[in-house]
Image 1 (cartoon, rainbow, N blue to C red):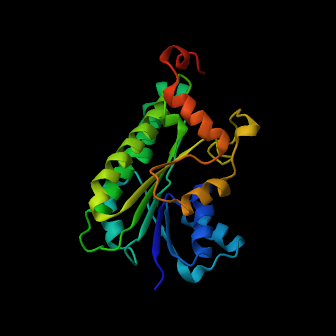
Image 2 (spheres, rainbow, N blue to C red):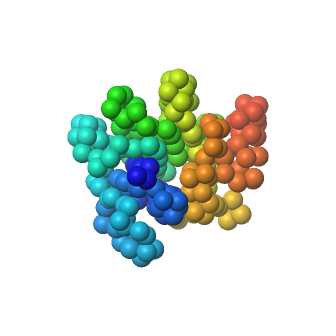
Length: 240
């Protein structure tokens, strides 16, 4: 029997590309999202092998439904990918609590809710990996996106502790710390074209994740990650 991958937030551009790669590698994939029709249409257009693909409804913010969702899965996952995302601009987040709160729910609270259920399932003895899609925005607070960045920082720290917690069970936890991605979430934003990465590039980093915790796709972004991490506060304060 093929191993099962559960992709949460499966309608993101990166998640859909990752699903295709997992299917190519022979995995059984459960694609979970609120946008089930969009996923089905995408997979049909890309001629995905639907015999190993299950599409089901999942809302990261519907915490009270997570237990029922997990109990109803056709099979327990070997690999879990959390890729759910939502973003409003920082200026909007500062005046629109609903937008801020939804980012917190999607990126952090929803992830904690469903992943906690998964790791505490004593009947699943073949769980081997959990991968979270985070962001360089969570590495250092910046005045242009600190509300969004704080939700990603919280998610990254949760995964860091989860990795230690699951170490005795030999379950690997990875965080994909991504830079700018050419996707529907960044459409309309003024971003440097030379730094934009294709969703398929990030997807390959997910599917080929090794044992390292922090994975930063792209040579340029690896450098930026290190600069952001160790930059003195006086210089960081000048960042946009």
